[in-house]
Image (cartoon, rainbow, N blue to C red; front, side):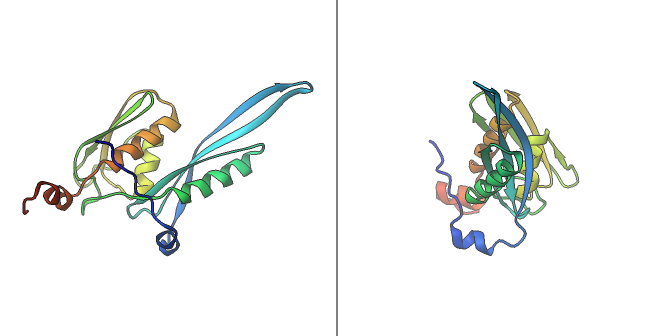
Length: 170
């Protein structure tokens, strides 16, 4: 069963106060043309409000600042809500996969902090997760790791949602 990602609509995005962005990676690409090499750049960034809303953006341009700006704008378009526990962790263990990258997210107790690589850490911090254990398998490509992490976060269910799906009371 594939989960359908529910992005925030424009009215919800406008109400978010402390939306911030974090640049994760800038790639340089070279095209060989008649006069030499023509460079272009792509940027990957994560946007979030540190309160349970996070999204990623990808932008390409001929100059680095333009690519970063496009990535930030794209990140604000793709925001989604993430369920969190009262102590700033995730409700249950979950696994996310994108292309060759797999990410395992494990809930952690109060005071643990975020034990993760740079790409996964950026997503968790922007989502407002404070206590998390992670393990990544396969590809270490930052783009695929970010997408795998966000795919894992979309699989999360709160205890109330799980109880409603099963038809039981807590």
